[in-house]
Image (cartoon, rainbow, N blue to C red; front, side, top):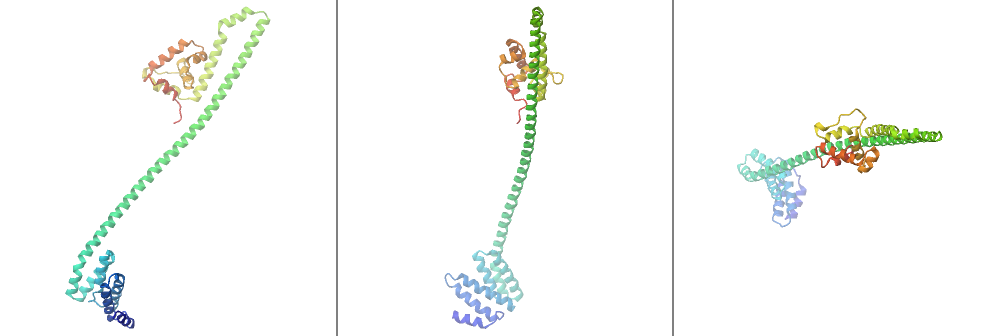
Length: 314
């Protein structure tokens, strides 16, 4: 019988209503067979197409196709076909057809709305995810900009550090050269005095300490100038560590004995005996000055450590 119906369908046009009836019979047959769902849907689709092309309003194929697709989970197509079936049933004037379609339609419509809600939820999740991604991108951009700015600042600091190092070396060489010249000058004076048998004059010159004082003042001047070039905000940075009424107020490029002791400390020379030799002072005097400085500090315990951090590149 199935073969006969197929042969018959091949002899008529799809626009013929008989074609739709034949396709519907085959769909019913395959619906009763296990594992033949695809064939059933195929012939329901042919029957529905035939009803549409022939202008048949009373056909049930489109309704059945919608129901089958709904059971299969294809809510979108099921909803579309049942709406069209309802329109055709109403247009046909058949109350029975309209009632049959109306029985299934609410279930499909509810499923369709549920699907829409799910899609809306997914869409909202996607929008939220995109929003979060955008925020992350913006934050990364801001952080990247800060890193670049920090790198530029670090580069500038390193460049300044190189300039400072070159200045320090230049000042050191200048100081060494001056000391060599003074030593040669002193050597000539001693030689001349001894040759002229002016030992008393030579003794008076040495005993007066004028040459030593002159050398010390020259050393302080060159050291102060070189150190302030390396750490231009050193006095302000030290004052920030001291109590308000204990701060230093000195001329530009000028350090006093206390600040010179701190300058040596900043250069990594923590040995009081070594500092005493550099400054021509007694060891006790250095200890007295260091204790006096700590007594002026906001935090006595961390004062030396804070001085060591002045001018560090962060």
